[in-house]
Amino acid sequence: MALKQPGVGIAITGCGSAAPTAFLDNQQLSQIVDTSDEWIATRTGIRQRRLAPPTQSLATLAAQAAQGAIAMAGLSPTDIDLILLATSTPDDLFGTACRVQAELGAARAVAFDLTAACSGFVFGLVTAAQFIHTGVYQNIVLIGADILSRWVDWSDRRTCVLFGDGAGAVVIQANGRDRLLGFELRSDGTQNHYLNLNYQPDPKHLTDDLEIGQGTFQPITMNGQEVYRFAARRVPEVIEKALFRANLSIEDVDWLLLHQANQRILDAVADRLNIPPEKVISNLAKYGNTSAASIPLALDEEVRQGKVQVGDTIVTSGFGAGLTWGAAVFQWGR
Image (cartoon, rainbow, N blue to C red):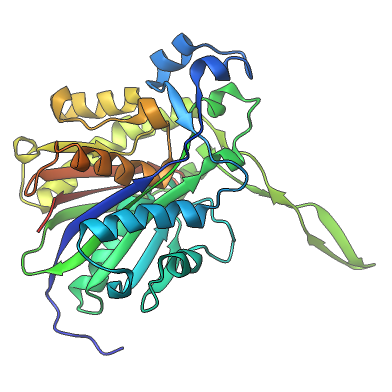
């Protein structure tokens, strides 16, 4: 495709979210594993998590979030040029974004999945911006969606207390003034073993001298202490770098919107950056860790409650498996 005039800015003009109606609170969870509401809440800040039934697909959840974002932006599905689906739990390993495109009726849109785990939304935001900055696309839907309950070991209290299901989406449009003010993305594969959802092959003999592996993915494993140390150290650093690129200081930030992993991590990052609690967006008590969905889901709640206003400066950061982490500074609205 031939490029249009480069140098176009972006604006985030709509948001939406969706979550299963069923939930599992800490008291109910204590009937499944040896834990308690006090133990979970004091260590994570989580009180309950939404869980998808077997009949709910990731595509449907993602499409519901996208519909809300498209409507808020004042667009129709046929206006959308590109759909980016950030997820680690697709319905189909070949990709789920095209199924979302079909459910939305976004016939003109190119669609593909992007996998960066809990950093997926931030990585997706920067990816979407490049398509607009180069003039290729005008209207993009970025969705973060995960159904992590599919891959949780419900007998492992170290991990099953953390994760929930949900989806969030934003519409990103070409704009005369660039509202993406700065970003920084990072990866470190040497720490990959701290958080995994690994494929486990089982040997299968095809002939006497030929063997392949056919297995399945294993439940989530995590070294929580190391992930906490990583996030508490690296997230403030990457936020400071993004703010430097934006030529802004902490005092210019209206909202800190972190991946909703653990309230202790949110508090540690805010303390390190000297950001007061009233500027920290947090809804993980109701949803738990929804991976790529957590940032846009929390953003949608704050916008619809009237807390985030047009022109507000938001610094957001995602961090997690890979290990990956990144930050972006943007202003809400045109």
